[in-house]
Image (tube, rainbow, N blue to C red; front, side):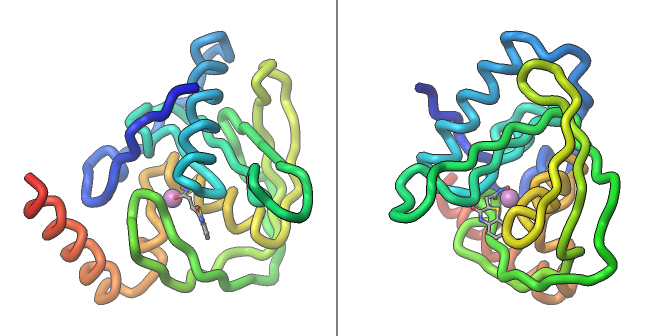
Length: 173
Ligand code: GNR
Ligand code: NI
């Protein structure tokens, strides 16, 4: 069990495009394990490696969670994920982000997606997602491309949120 510190905005690393994983080895599997620990502890429904300062195309998700009263955990670990199809209808979800603490905003995204990726054994897989999982996987893939949910809202709201977060950082330092 290892918890990794989560980076918060504004931070240049959160605006950086992450590198593809060349080989899915023990180091990547350890990263995935630590990311699960960190995500469940936070708690969050998803986490991208970029958020723990590792600039690799790795993400984990569980929209059910470990302490859910109903339903079993649904952990997913995606390496080098690529969206291969999006539905032509959209869904709006009030999103939050562990890297943008205490702020929430409605984001419009395709309601359903298909995602091709490598699993922790290096095998190619495809995920078909709808509902919250579809929102989450798009939010996480955005992180790997240096995009935050606030980049999908108006510049006015985005700048207000980022200014508030910067102020908190300055007060803490
Ligand atoms: O925990 C999280 N909740 C969430 C809610 C709505 C849309 C996306 C998310 S992902 C977020 C965790 C996080 O920041 N992942 O990058
Ligand atoms: Ni996030």
